[in-house]
Amino acid sequence: MLLFVGLGNPGTRYAGNRHNIGVMVVDQISKRHGIAPWRRRFHGLAAEGPVGSERILLLKPETYMNESGRAVAEAAHFYKLGVADIVVFHDELDLPPGKVRVKTGGGVAGHNGLRSITEHVGNDYKRVRIGIGHPGVKELVHPYVLSDFAKAERPWVAALCEIAADCAGLLAAGQDASFQNKVHLAMDAKGFGSRE
Image (cartoon, rainbow, N blue to C red; front, side, top):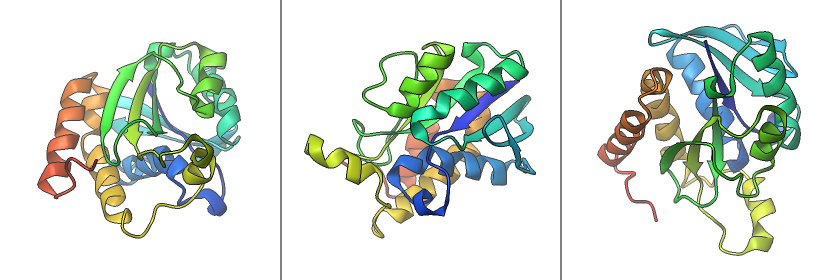
């Protein structure tokens, strides 16, 4: 079993925020692969089902971003999963909007959700970094990530969530480079490539 975690803040107030793109992708994986129902477990919402040939636990922590590690650690402990079985989908300021990078381990780059997960389970989990762009000035980062995607951004956000969900079987199978490449090719085909 693998644990797919979508990072974000709980509640309708935050649902459309840039900080919640991890939750948006996991919601789309749930829809695309028919994984339901969502149940309140592990300080979050969880649903279990197959993605490709792997059984996946989808988890949306409801602890707020800076406490995400509590939910992740509880779910991993319950299912006796190692840190290598955890895949975290999260927003990434240092990537252009719509770009995706998959990596294992590394720094947390000021991301409070990643910091909390690293504190609770260690650092060597897989991260699906989803570019949201940077507002340009450090002082604007907090309001930027906690604001909704602009109307003009929503088409690429919707496309990315659908494409990532379609390709999630590759991630489940450990084919990270193939997942990344397929997402980028499909985004290019939809006209959302090279969004610098």
